[in-house]
Length: 251
View 1 (tube, rainbow, N blue to C red):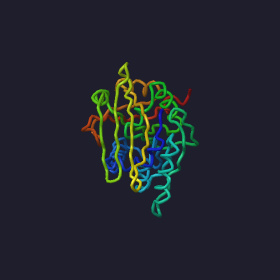
View 2: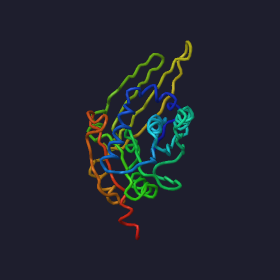
View 3: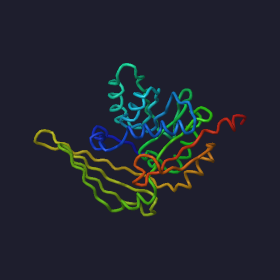
C-alpha cells in the first residue's frame, strides 16, 4: 500500500468537493438501518482527518488510523482544534493489512476508495485482522471505485487549478489491466516562485464479487453491496458487512 507523502499538506486544497458531511450522514443512516448502537468508530485510512472530525462532532469516539505520518500530522491539527465537548480522535500510524489495536469498536469505516490502495493479498490480511477489533456483530463499511471507473481513466491527463495551486495527474493501466498507476505533480506558489512536489500512486482494481467473497471467507456476515451512497452517481460502490465473530467465537 502506497501512502501520501509531501502531497499530504495539499490534500485538503485539492479535495474541496468531497462531501464529508454527506458521508457521515450516510454512515449514521446505515447504523440505524442495521439497528446498531454505535458509540465508537474506527476510521481506517483516515487521511487528513476531516471525516473523523465530522463524526467526532456528532458525539462518536474515534480511533483514526493511517499509514502516512504526513497525513496524520494534518489530521492531528484538526483534532486539536475540535470544540469543547468533542472527544479528540486517537491517531495511530499503521498499515491496514497489519492492523493492531487495543480493544474493540462498534463500527469501522474506510472511505474514498482507500481499499483500492490494497492489493488482494493485503485485502485478505485486512479483512481478517479488522474482525479482531470489532465487536461481535459490529459493522464494517467501506467504498471502492468499480473496475469500469479505473479503465475509463487509462491514458487520461487531468489538471486541477486553484488560486495558488496547480495539480497535474496522469493515469495509466498496468499491462495486465489490474492496476491503475497515476503520477501527480503539484505546483504551489511561493512568492514569485513555484514549488513542485511529485508522487506516484497505485490503485488496485477489485471486482465486486471478489470483495464479497473475501468478506465472507474472513467471517463477515449479512454482506450488502449498495449503490446509494454519496458519489454513487460516479459509480462508487459501498459495502456493508457485520462481524460474524459471534458465530465463530467457539473456534
